[in-house]
Amino acid sequence: MVNILWVDDEVELLKPHVLFLKGKGYEVDTCNNGYDAIDMVRANSYDLIILDEMMPGMTGLETLPLIKDIRPTTPVIMVTKSEEENIMDKAIGSKIADYIIKPVNPNQVLLSIKKNVHQQQLVTEQITADYRAEFGRITTMCQMASSFAAWSTLYRKITNWDIELSESNDTGIKEVLTYQKAEANQEFCKFVRRNYYDWINKRADESEIPVMSHTLMRKRILPEVDSHEKTTLLLIDNFRYDQWRAISSLLRGYYDVDVDDFYCAILPTATQYARNAIFAGLMPLAIDKMMPDKWLNDNEEGGKNQYEEEFLRRQLSSVGKNYRWTFDKLVRPEAGRKLIENINRIYDADFSVIVYNFLDILSHARTETDIIRELTEDEASFRSLTRSWFEHSDLFVLLKLLSERGHTVIITSDHGTIRVDNPIKVLGDRETSSNLRYKTGRNLQYNAREVYEVTRPEDIQLPRVNLSSSYIFAYNSDFLVYNNDANRFIRYYRNTFQHGGISMEEMIVPYIVLNPKKR
Image (cartoon, rainbow, N blue to C red; front, side, top):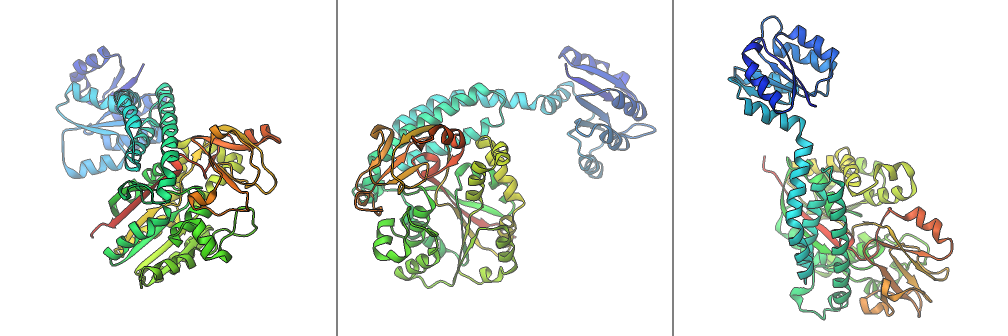
């Protein structure tokens, strides 16, 4: 039962309205002054309060803050005869939930009650109905998708529904979406397996080969830089499309979205491979052959992404670009603050590159830290944490400053990440790489039907660790564990966010271009 308090000095005239609400199943108490209203609010817990703005003695505007002191979370609907702007400003500034102009229409009151008391229920019902209607179309799209562009469209649609349904209380429909997303990922993995070799080796029609990590700079980013006076590339490690959606509303007052698109990350979808490929404009095998002193294999000690700035310098030189440019890699929080303190060097540059590692660090922290794992138990909570971090980050401050200076901003990533839940057992020697979504090494033993196997790494332009090395990649939400102490590893890594394998979340990477709003 929903309990409502209606406060109005002419409450006797409102009996038909009260009876109307009672007929709709609401319990309604009434009083005719602010003093009694305060006593009643103190004594009773109401779901909603309807408050007249003009009353003798204590006005509605005077009563409102006293009610809020007692029941700060109870929504209050203000009823007023006046539409004067200053009165409305005071009411809205006092955080009313809604307002109604006299003469009061009972249906108008009912609508306001539903909006403020039943909103979650109504949203859940409508979103559930909309998704049920869309379910068949998504299934058909999944069956018909035959290009990376089609899969990107499908991934965008599934992500949109994932975000929409996160606001629903219907756990059953959420499970349906989870199942549908898993089915879509299975088909996407088959699609990648059929086409990846042809993409990498240019054996397919050029129109069918997506923009990939090693072609991203040349095909997408540099043409954008050429088209604008000042451009900043913001590469956020481990950044997925749903996370972009989580922060995008915060940027609405500063930028217009010019491009909202995707590109395809190379395999393995890991920083060492994908990010080096972006900045070098080369596949990992070519980097290893041309600059062997700057490529470290998985089994070699040392930082695997130490030469990104040098790779970019070489690529810009090879395509004849003479930009004034800067390169910054932000790993620790204090690095963001230092960059803001020295922001004039970015203002002065034609092209600025900023690599931001926080989300990758957060993903690994979730694996290793219980409290972070509890805060990010699913994709919705991970998005929420991403938004909270971004809203209070130096990165947000930086983007506001760049907007003021008229910089075009490109936001993208080197790869995404996926929450894993299905263990696949493999055997390997001590030289085998430790990543949970791909393995490289010699004498790997596995079920070939459960992984994407590449016995000749050069076939997909990857270096060999040794003469007999091969690669295997996990599909969908699988993760690779050794037989030794498998149960402990499964308990530790199940439901953690990982990357390196084949899934829509890892390979379909957001590519966003923001133009600053004109001021």
